[in-house]
Every structure is written in structure tokens, then in C-alpha cells.
Amino acid sequence: MSESATAKPVRLYEVTVSMWGQSYMRPVSARSPAAARYRAYLDADLSMPFREYLRAASVRLSAGSPADDGYGYIRRAYKVDPRIGQRVTLRNEGKDWEGREGEIVYPGASRQYVHVMFDDLDNPVVVHPLSIVFPSPSTPVIGEGEQQSAS
Image (tube, rainbow, N blue to C red; front, side, top):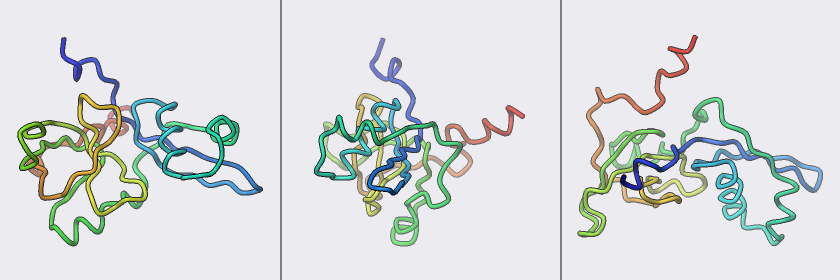
């Protein structure tokens, strides 16, 4: 059985941190709530131990994609349409990366590249928009329409 068949699905989580009398929420794509919390900690670049951050942070599954998915600049500059949850294939990045498949995830603070969670990795990789083979517009995005069919 291949690694990609056993990999947990990528989900969008909301990590809320309450400290110093303030709260802030940030969307984070990860394979588990614990991984989402850790990625948010790394992205925050705080000068506090992770153990202390754990006491201040809570995680919940996001109800859907955020209003600003973070890929507006890429749409304008490169005329491609990356969407969170979309399956893509990598090209023109060398023989070790050629043809690898993954899922587009929320970019966080770095929005000039597409963030892709490859099937055999646990952390997203930043990829140039022109190094991605996007599916045809008729290909559905993973998770799109699932909530509609549940009602």
C-alpha cells in the first residue's frame, strides 16, 4: 500500500490564540488539529516556548474556506486560478519533483506562491504558479458541494 493511500486528508482549521488581552484567529491547512496548532506557532514567530503557546491556542475545524483565500495576487499576475482543495500536478521542477501530485492549501502569510500539500509529505511546499498543471475548469474541487449534498 502506498503512502498516499494512507495519508490523512488535508483540512482547513481555525487556530485561535488568546494572550496579552487579545485574541486572533488564523486559518491553517494541516492533516490534524495538532499539526495546525504547530504550523500556526511556527508562522507566528513568537519568542515563547511552544508549551506556553499550547495553553493560549485552541483549534477547530473551519466551516469553509475563508472569504480571502490568499491567491488573489497569483490570479492577477499569472492568470491561473488556484483554489483551496484543488488537486494539482507539479512540472518543470526537476526529475525528483516532476509529476508529483498534491492538494492546494491555504497560503497563510506567504501569498506570492501556491502552497501545495503533496501526498507523501506532512507539510506544504511553496511552488511557483507556473510550475503547476491545473485541472480543467470542469474538474470539481475536493470538498466542493459536500455540504450542499448533506442538507
